[in-house]
Image (cartoon, rainbow, N blue to C red; front, side, top):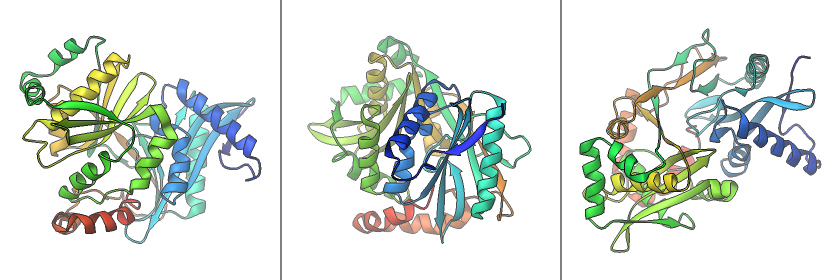
Length: 353
């Protein structure tokens, strides 16, 4: 029997029970599918639509009444950056997660059809493996860093290369402390000022609040302090046996105090003690400070495969800070007063998926 492809939001709005039941089945599939990631969870649909104002098209394949694959898609449309259908916007991974090739092929074909019906510039699928070898692919820009962690915290500390381990110990010697925060009150201003120093617009505060509310215990914030004052902070995701420190930042004093090094060690230590067995450092661009920092921890970069079906676009998009045409914007953004950047940033950032 061939798979049927449906949309998670295809049910009438009044059919609340049906929609809720479909979301539960979707997440149950994601939980057990080896290809699925935290970013395939159904909660991202509500965040895209209700918090960021984008249209979401969550496709799933079904055979004999059971879900056989999922493909979450968000349409990000703006005057500045064009019109794209992405799996998944604002997430490092996405693309097809399916139990077999038949389901994967059905979902990919449905996504191509949808992209053409919507008249987008391009369809972008963010995979950790090459899935569509005949599609244009961006595989030389982004990498991910993932590593197994030992059940013993001390063994994980010893596994960090010597120079980087010395930085973690420097943070300990500086009497830094780590705390779990109940909300984002300390995290958001630290993160906002950090990305502004990098020349990047910040996402709105309500976005981070929505992450905490939507994902509950699968999302927390760890903040480090010195004499009670915050130094660095990171928002983390948890999925199966993995911890993913995702949005992080530090004050201007963080580097001198080894606040970043201590922060990520504390995330690893806490996750290890709670039984998590994989540390996912997330995405970095080759040749950046973030890339070097993660590699110094002994993590080996693994390429990410962002594959494209071009609809109206003539070439693969280059919407990233390394594109020379954004250099003047980045330099100017760094010089903005923080309150101006925080006012304008959310409007821009929601369009950069």
